[in-house]
Image (cartoon, rainbow, N blue to C red; front, top):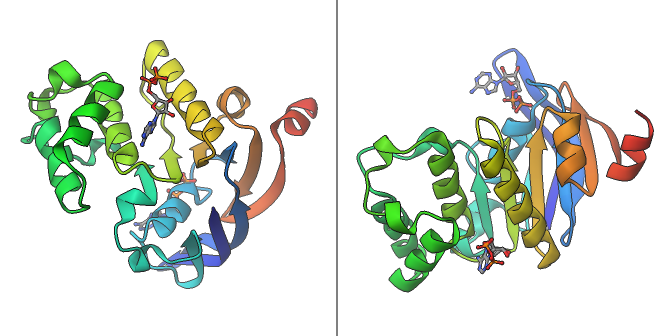
Length: 218
Ligand code: ADP
Ligand code: ADP
């Protein structure tokens, strides 16, 4: 469960998020739909404890991210797939994450296989395609078997097979009872992935509706 309460984030004069409140429930894919600049990434970064809110709060399972002892076990996120240091191998990257969260090496290997990077795990990430980087980002997100998952524009730059793969993965994670929040600026993408949608614009919540109801309006 994710709870965002009266969240506001300003960068100088820019108000990226403006008093946003919503709850994301488990067991379904919740879409976070809005144009570029609407504040989706900023909200996700606040949930992940990467940005300090100007006011308000974002909670994961009732706690701020900073108060979660072993975060990978509770919340995983695919935020910016280009963020991994290119000189490392995928295995080294995940193993480093795993060690700081008390996760064993067997799990690292299992997750690499699961995302289809088993045979590429010992290659440096600098030589990876965007699709492979996305898969590595997903591996990091699911490494700790978390109940809450965030995906920020996960299909951007992927080929059709990669897009299908990531959509199916998100649906499977929700079907297992996890809380899944996925952002997109494309209504067409949301229609293929989300069960429930939060529509945002200029840092505010414009509508909250089932995907079926939203589609019926277009
Ligand atoms: P979205 O993810 O919906 O595209 P963002 O959260 O990335 O929206 O951005 C919301 C607004 O905040 C935009 O106007 C963006 O330019 C601004 N913004 C985001 N991050 C920063 C930052 N680090 N510094 C200054 N402005 C930022
Ligand atoms: P499958 O074993 O069903 O073929 P895939 O190879 O497509 O699965 O990988 C995605 C699967 O991994 C999904 O069913 C997803 O729910 C599952 N999964 C994701 N995260 C975890 C996790 N942390 N622990 C166990 N399974 C997970």
